[in-house]
Amino acid sequence: MEKKKSASSRRAKKPARKGRRTTTHAERHARDLAALIALRDEDIDTSDISDVADWSKAVVGKFYRPIKEPITLRLDADVLAWLKSQGPGYQTRINTLLRDAMVHRSTKTP
Image (cartoon, rainbow, N blue to C red):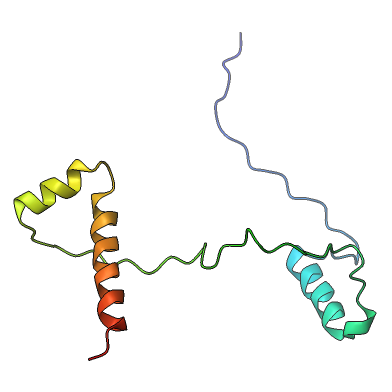
């Protein structure tokens, strides 16, 4: 019985195409985008786009997320205990309280 060789083999090279080159996704995308840019607004078919008539459930700023900055904050123990006693999310509550104070103070006239 012959012993099995356990060496990995190299992948074979793909045969070269004669004169033909495939286009990449990026090249097709760039070509399609250039064709769209060249069109006039009147030539673009928008018949398959539905009209949005009811904006009553739209939410302004739904995807807005302010940049957060990690800091160290020293609070009185009783204040921190009160914030934590209201359930998870005490850091969010601190931020909300501070934001409300900021907005309230900035709306006051000096």
